[in-house]
Length: 292
Ligand code: ADP
Ligand code: MG
Image 1 (cartoon, rainbow, N blue to C red):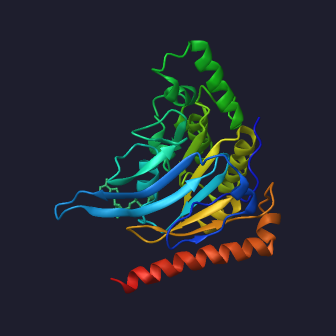
Image 2 (cartoon, rainbow, N blue to C red; image 1 turned 90 degrees about the horizontal axis):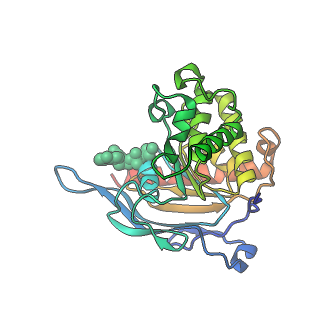
């Protein structure tokens, strides 16, 4: 098992960005697992292309937990789809392990926001989790043992033969996480994965995710509009402006690990970081509304 990186991570150098780089990461020679450079994406419309994200730069260190926060409509999903190779870029590049991505890459897995739409109701949990392994020439035994392992990791070893609609929202999202983990990804991209569950379930899922991250050593790129969640989970928080979004700040979170829902959130450092991120998000919203 690989242990997770400590909380202070290297931060990509970007223009006009509040950049914090720890001395240990400056000394580290391992290249980032993901490098997003000058990434822009515009969607076509009748009146011409409409920019959703504009010139985004940041890097993600291997084994780190990086959150991206930004207001609704700021382009977070667009950014993650581009990074996952699921949407063509308008310009710029995404490098995974130093190689330019040209489409979905083996080793990069995505968990979407809406589990009720991403899980197939007519397939059992086991079959939903097995989907990413199909058509890759794996043996039946390999698929079965991988699926069992992934379901066990999210505490659903007993639920493989049930259908998604027989499970609570939190359990369904755990099935979606198991499906993301079944390929043993190097990078797990999660787009607002806990947005549709109640607060208590959300806290439990956050802690489950931190445990899985620390046990597997997977790099996590996590999208949320919840500032507390971004600070609680992450080594770094990348703050996006309102759309067409760009990176307004890249903040190192040096809170000790393991984190604890009560103790961590009680710390003055947590409150300071939360206020800092909140202030940046608010400032970018004010700037945008003044420019309209
Ligand atoms: P977020 O995830 O931060 O809420 P999105 O990436 O979903 O933001 O959307 C960013 C912007 O791009 C929004 O203005 C949205 O309307 C637009 N957009 C998203 N998907 C499409 C699409 N397929 N076609 C056209 N415009 C889109
Ligand atoms: Mg979104």
